[in-house]
Picture 1: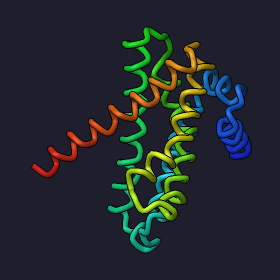
Picture 2: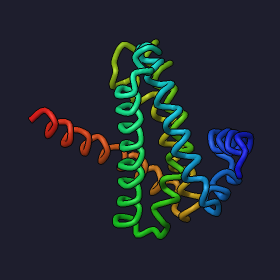
Picture 3: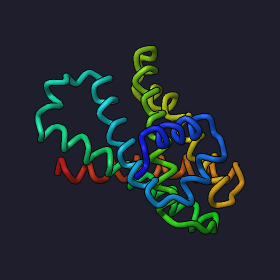
Length: 176
């Protein structure tokens, strides 16, 4: 059983861009579950930070919807980065490592909440707040799938663009 202290320690290492965290993710299958938990907790905190009341989150329907959307975004973004890395840059590596890196980078998206307080534009807040997320994902890829930083950064940004496109398409289907 993995203790919370180990996961928190690896999260801090990932945020500080330390190689050990990414090597641990590469060789620890349980890190995928830990990443999923980090994604869920981060999404709840972001939702609260953006103004949703705690009472609203106690509604099971709302909570499940928020958690499913976060997990969906995590899976889609990881898949998009995997596709860009694998099919454009011909990099090896399993999809699971992309899930782990992205999941451990997810808590940095809490910066979006703080930047949104300072910047009136939602898009600008997303870009500025999400920059550290992209840096962590790119850095993790350089250690785990042996890709240059330039290609890793391109894959991380390309994955973000593909995720936004997928969400726009699925959002338009839902309104149709």
